Amino acid sequence: MVLQIGVIGGHKASPAEIKVAESVGEKLALAGAVLVCGGLTGVMEAACRGAKRSGGVTIGILPGLRAEDANQYVDYPIVTGIGDARNSIVVRSAQAVIAVAGSTGTLSEIAYALKSEIPVISLNSWDIPGVHQVDKPAAAVELALELADGKG
Amino acid sequence: MVLQIGVIGGHKASPAEIKVAESVGEKLALAGAVLVCGGLTGVMEAACRGAKRSGGVTIGILPGLRAEDANQYVDYPIVTGIGDARNSIVVRSAQAVIAVAGSTGTLSEIAYALKSEIPVISLNSWDIPGVHQVDKPAAAVELALELADGKG
Amino acid sequence: MVLQIGVIGGHKASPAEIKVAESVGEKLALAGAVLVCGGLTGVMEAACRGAKRSGGVTIGILPGLRAEDANQYVDYPIVTGIGDARNSIVVRSAQAVIAVAGSTGTLSEIAYALKSEIPVISLNSWDIPGVHQVDKPAAAVELALELADGKG
Amino acid sequence: MVLQIGVIGGHKASPAEIKVAESVGEKLALAGAVLVCGGLTGVMEAACRGAKRSGGVTIGILPGLRAEDANQYVDYPIVTGIGDARNSIVVRSAQAVIAVAGSTGTLSEIAYALKSEIPVISLNSWDIPGVHQVDKPAAAVELALELADGKG
Image (tube, each protein chain N blue to C red):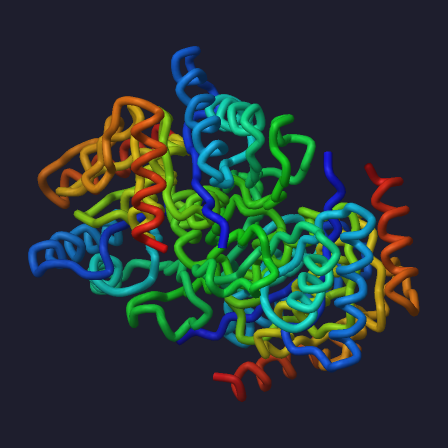
């Protein structure tokens, strides 16, 4: 089965966070991993853009009822219509999750990932026991792939 | 955006239904459509097998918590963990839905599709007002593509 | 455990359907059953109004994010935020379900009830195999209580 | 509309946490608030037991498919069947939430509450920015009622 890695973070993001998310998406694609995210703007869009730039595949698990809400870099929109309850689906569909900054929505995703024993790597995101803190996109992707592998 | 077509039906299926579902999957793939389904056995597995045989892409929206529950022809497992409530997500993620026989689970999907104004084509499935009845896989796929297009 | 009976039907309803739903709610309350519904207008509101008039208890399982969306006769609003996916919760929280007319949303609820082997009684609602058709509110409530009991 | 206050925490709990949860339930009931929780064991059961001892009303929003999974102090079981995705429903159905210790499931609930701007009071639970930390059940209930009121 293909490796699916989640990228989570805010739908609003600073220029620095955007740059980090793009780099994460790019490196995941180069490693052959499929990117799973919430499908919207901010960190999600930047990660998808990075992935597509490197020829990757992207899945966007949307909260609303419209496929059109997906950012333009989402290959496969999943239209849940269940609002933020879809956060649990984003992380469960991934073998490891990389968090780029983010607010309470991201925190709910981290909580679900930890509960499901899905490894979480943080790039300047929440500092919760069990979450792996790293400094650089390259380190995040490397660790995600390693931990996902150990999991599979 | 890529065309995503849903195939719904029972996780148990007769040999005749399996053959029909395989043919539907095959023809969808040849037409370049992505197949969305519930990811399990029966009609879902047969449709995915048909799609992969013709080089298509398949997405399986699973009710449980394990990606491993997906049939072996699912490219991208979406792990919802929300049980049969995921039925609404299967149909919403498609621009048109083809139903192959099926029981009450399939009926819930048809109901959600009709509510969301997503066209439903039936191959020996439920006869509900608004559902298009056809006889052959080729006719089902043709009509699904036509109606999905009109929708987009 | 207390008996919880679901009442399902459209958020828009004709005067005749409103009258039927009110009577159903009234009779359920008199029988000591708790009324579970989708919490909104139309059949849901009429059933709740009937139940409160007879001193009953009402639970409204809302699709949106605002408790304020509940009709004024709901005692306990459950704020799901998962949209129409909440339909499956309405029926699962009941030991039997009475359908008053209704459209595709009601059909999805009937399908979920049948799948969960929860008895469904129809008052001019969908004619699906397995659904009990009756003519009068009194007969619907009587049969619901009887079948729920057999289930418990 | 009646005041609904959530009590969240682990399904496993230490004797000290059980005692705290019971006291919270008791005081909520004495204040006339309806207790909303996840309906299972541990903190949830203790809070319900406390509430019933003081004549309160309890609602249990269950993850599974069986009303029988509710602890014996739940008046009204809501049978979601959506697993841990029901965590978002527990907090949204409350005007304020009291967390008693708890692990990652509780963290997901706190995250959802903060995202929905529902006040969270912690009794030895997660220390997340925005969560109110208190020491005693009485203080937790008092603050929950005050903040819920400000919210209504």
